[in-house]
Amino acid sequence: RQAEQAAQQAREQELLSALEEERSASEIDRYVAAIDDRVRSVWVRPVGSRPDNSCTVEVRLIPGGEIVAGSARIIRSSGNGPFDRSVVAAVYKASPLPVPSGRLFDHFRELRFEFKAGN
Image 1 (cartoon, rainbow, N blue to C red):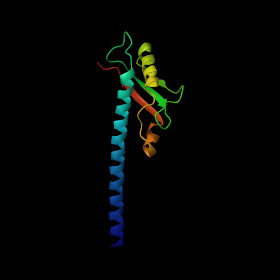
Image 2 (cartoon, rainbow, N blue to C red; image 1 turned 30 degrees about the horizontal axis):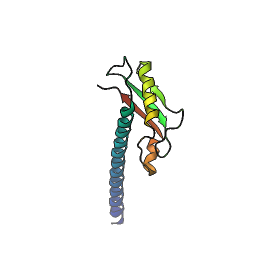
Image 3 (cartoon, rainbow, N blue to C red; image 1 turned 120 degrees about the vertical axis):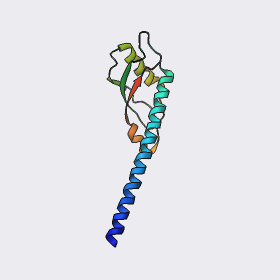
Image 4 (cartoon, one colour; image 1 turned 180 degrees about the horizontal axis):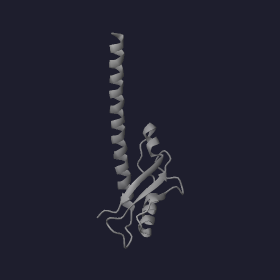
């Protein structure tokens, strides 16, 4: 009987952990979208960039969303230098970025995200 109860408690704990992870992932996605919106709002599209241009940027953040000076860099280039440089400039201009506080911030301390030019 005790073994059954222990097994039931273990299953319940696993379910609670899975729900917490799912909720955290959802919150992380929401903040990543907000960061993309913030960067996009200050981005100036360079002449010659195409709607299909995209690059991957990495930045280091401190609590509050400030970008550590010199930390923004292109991890995967679009192949279009002016586009890549414009994205890095927009990332710095967008600082501080919207980030969560508390434990969830740890997911944003070293942030890597893809920036797509879009239409």
